[in-house]
Length: 154
Image (tube, rainbow, N blue to C red; front, side, top):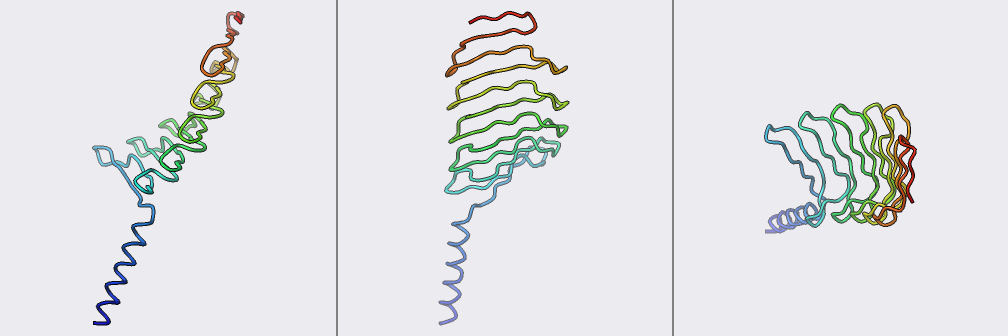
């Protein structure tokens, strides 16, 4: 009888210790290749989140806190080159957002505050020359400068 209680409480303790851990989740594409890998806590994504192309290459690496994106998010082209770097706070884009050409040169840069464009947005050509600049204030355009046409509006 003593052994049965010991076994019962050991199983019960193991069950509750497993239940309180962050279970790992892996999803798959219809062809069976890995699509996403992440952990959950109280049914919300928590910690590192990885998303893959169906070819197996890493697409996105993000961080989640309490089910919301938080911190640096990085996206890659299917061929492995850096595509975009964004920053999140409590599920909303906050701070710099930079998109790159496959060559590694900047394509766009923008600034966000609480998911709204707020600051300078710039676009570069693949030859690395600044083409366009727009200044935003809480998602409203304040000024535009077209460096290709040398036109500025304010």
